[in-house]
Amino acid sequence: MASEPNESLDPELEQLLAFIRDARGFDFTGYKRSSLARRVRKRMADVGITEYLDYRDLLEASAEEFDFLFNTILINVTSFFRDAESWTYLQREIIPELLSSVGSEEDIRVWSAGCSSGEEAYSLAIVFAQALGIEECARRVKIYGTDVDEEALREARSGSYSERSLEALSDDLRNEYFEQSGSRFVFRSDLRRRVIFGRHDITKDAPISRLHLLVCRNTLMYFNVEAQSQIIDRFHFALREGGHLFLGKAEMLLSDGERFEVVSMRQRIFRRRSGRTDAQHLTIPLTLDPAAGVEVRDVARKRQLRDLVLETAPNAMISVDLDGIIIQANSQARAQFGLTSQDVGRPFRDLEISYRPTELRSLIERAHSERRSIRVNAVERRLSADDVQYLDITVQPLTADDGLVIGSSVAFVDTTALTRLQLEVKRNREDLETAYEELQSTNEELETTNEELQSSIEELETTNEELQSTNEELETTNEELQSGNEELDTMNEEIRIRSTELDEARTFLEGVLSSVAAGVVVLDSELRVRSWNRGAEELWGLRGDEVQRQPFFHLDFGLPTEALVEVVNRCLVTGVRTEPVDLIAVNRKGRRIRCSVICSPLDSQSDGVVLLMEDIQELSEEG
Image (cartoon, rainbow, N blue to C red; front, side):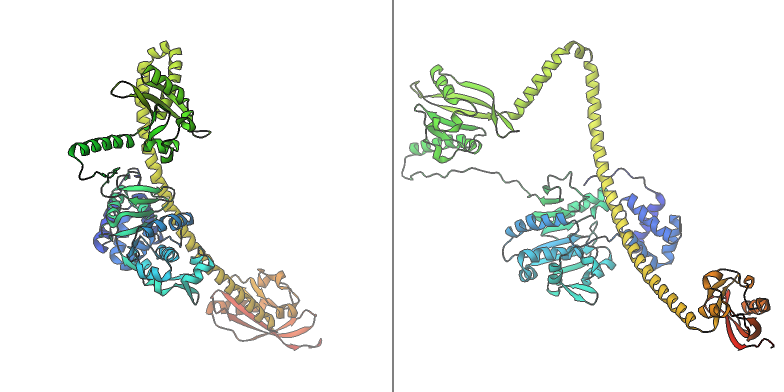
């Protein structure tokens, strides 16, 4: 895991963390201070507190506040098959290898550390059920899901999820592994019994042991370097030899190559190395006749030793006799030039190696005639259009005890790296010779520059580690944003429901007011018109949109409103409905009428009244 830059410690925050540890047993001192301080500050802002000491006082006074704080710090962002590409690689490449290494009756042990609400653990159950079949998976696979958040574990144990939580699953997987219960979907019971959930703190609790697979995704990034190192030690102990470690996309094992080998850096999958390195031995069985004499057996052993030396030589070697027949080709030669055991005994000239990468037959003849080894350096062998191999080839004549040449050996030494370096050096030397005098005078400056370059490399390595830490921090922030987005989605849904209810209530109220034959006028605290129903329009001839928000007592219509000023004010002050007031008015048709007006306070708010106006008698012109 890459280390994060040094973080300055806030003494007040450290005191708060120590208090939480001592009071509730939650030790957050191993968490990264930047993200931890941000989450604590968020909770403090929610309760309107700015100082750590004041917030500690609140924690001491309210046990319930601990739960709110823990839910804020422990970001439970997870989903089924999160980062689908990584899960696909696990399912296609890792699981088959894991199953092939385990006996058909042996239990398979899997640990999902930091499982949150259980989606990851159940994803593992689905993966193994797909590979083994549901019945065998339920018989052999044990999956342990652990977390420090009890509330999240309660949700995980229920195995019940919303339809939205299962969006990552295909319809076939959802139908096969989940049973609908009302608006929720419950993971199938036979497999759910094989997923065991429990509280576990990976920073201090003893790890689960003898694991074939350990999954801990996007959890380590919340911890500092020291805590990460301790956790990796526990994970190494938990895994059996060859067991796999599956991390999150923001986490890497950059400096633990001795204990873990990289299986896929892109997918963040690693394998626990064996505790020891087994030497690889090439053995050729002895087939000596027990009745043979000691000298015969010694000769056979020596000959066998010589054969082994040639066979296991690090460089490719072939032997050719005077008749041009291949006598021997060691393992390196067979592998490098595509030779087989059937090529031994064939004429050398019939093989491609005799003329490619260079003409060897003439070199062999020359070595025989001159009775000396012939060496050709930096022979190009083109492996592909863009890949060239360089070989140093040595042809050594082989002579018998009587001094006669009986054959030759051809050795091939791969000098690609060295030759490329030499070619580069040669090109550099030509350039250096051109500027030799100038470089002599600046030699000391180059040495200084070299030291600066080394320092820059070290700075770049440090910067790389800081960038990795920043990446982890960004991933943490992303999960916080995702958590906040989910909260906003929930709030938006609640607002939408309330808006719908308000629209329905408004429509209902308008319908009620419209259906009332009498005139109904609602005034606010400033005696402006808030509502003017259809009965009022029919009675006085003014439309509702004409009088909306207009001062009632400034309106010019057939009702003598000045006679109602005292009645309305009294109703506003006392909040008591008034007796009917009969007024002589003129309706929209221009006829004189007797109008009864009742003023009532609004039930839902004290500042406002409702005027009920009813035509009780039409008067004659003389009346």
